[in-house]
Length: 284
Image 1 (spheres, rainbow, N blue to C red):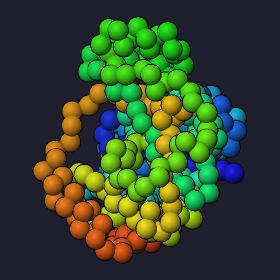
Image 2: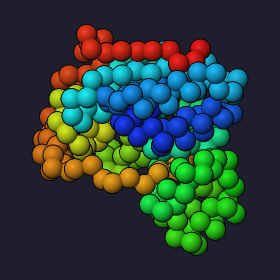
Image 3: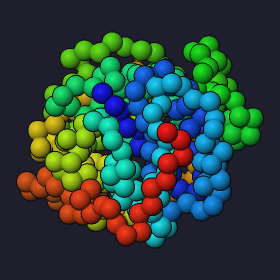
C-alpha cells in the first residue's frame, strides 16, 4: 500500500526544510511526499530544489510540489490539491512545521484500519528552542527519549510522555463521534473515504475548524475515529499564531452542520484541477 504524506506549507522554508529532511529519513518502505503549498514565494521553491538530488530513504517513491496562488488562507484548497496530485491509497496529513520521527509513516501504517481515520498529536517546542533547532540544523527527529527528557526539564517542550509507544489495539477506538482536539497537522484518512466526502471544504473562509468539519462529515459517512497518540507524535516548531478572526464564525458553521445530514464538502476535491494549480516533480 502506497501512503501519500500531504505536507501543508506557506512561506516558512526553514521549517519545511527540517520536515523534509525528517521525511527523507523515514523507515517506511512505500510512501510519497506531496508538498501542498498555499502560495509560498521563491524561497520555498529554492528550498525544495535543493532536495532534488538529496540522499533519501529507499522507501520514498516521489517528492512533489503542488502549488496554488496566494489568495489568503486557503489550507483546505492546498490539501485538496495535494490529494489530487497524490497516488496513495492512504493519506497522511502533516503540517510543514511539524517534524516527524523516523518511524512516523511506518507507525501510521501499523495503525491504519479500514473504517477508521487516525488522529495523532504533537509535542510543542518553545520559541527559543525552535530557533536553536532551525539555526543549528539539528536532526531532532532522530533524538531519543533521554534527550527529550532534558528538553522537558529545561522548559523547551510542553510534554514528552506521548513519545512512549503504546500498542495498537481496540482501546484506540473512540466510542463516540468527537471533533475536539482534531489536528490536521497529524491526521490519516483512507483515500476512498476522503473522496466520498469530497475532501476538505474550501468554502470555509480563513483560519479555523475546517479539520473538525471533515471529521464530522467522515463520521456521518460511517468512518470512526482512532487515536494515534503514543505512537505517531510529531515535534511542532513554534510559530506566531494565525489570526483567529474567523474562528467563531467557522465554529458556528460546524455546530450548525452537526444538526444536518451533510457529508460532502460544498467546494472540495472535485474542484481540482484548477487552472491555477501547478504540480512539479522534485524527485522521483
